[in-house]
Image 1 (cartoon, helix red, strand yellow):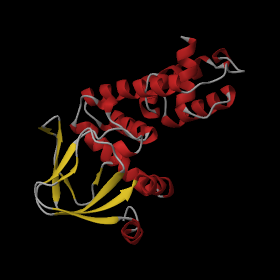
Image 2 (spheres, helix red, strand yellow):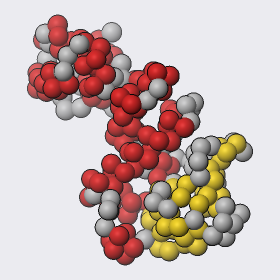
Image 3 (cartoon, rainbow, N blue to C red):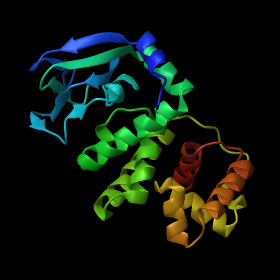
Length: 234
């Protein structure tokens, strides 16, 4: 099981809905995340139904809670629904402590992004999870989805890089080898390691090795920091 059932039940508060009850409403502030135990509910954005209904095992409301943004959709029960409710802090702690749960949330978000091919940048979610989802789509989506995932990953990296103040690096980008600089430029453009490898006709292992050397040379630890340096140099 993705997360121990006993742990989730001990930390969550039981919630029951009848048909027609709204669990969350688009635009509302978020303070809870919900795990569906049974039943189903439809998802609507701006009054239009989006994708298949949520059902047992699905999480609802995690997107808004993780970065304190308004709810992105309205979720309404289509029949009796049983759920567990988790406060924002409790859910964030669970996500940090349970890697399998984080992977489940990433997979859930990936499915949603494939179903809703517009407005991805407006989805509120933990940025690491969102990047993971974009990278997953780059490797397994349609051509249109792959293009959109790369575009949205680049937008997210730029937003994070410009929002994070950084000092002038002690080591300039000129210290990188030509191969490392090509990798750095593609990473800053939002490509996953697999997508970079395909673009440069390299193995993923080689790309990962280049990134490791880049981080050491530039004294950074993340794609966001690397994107910031590339953006400021261009």
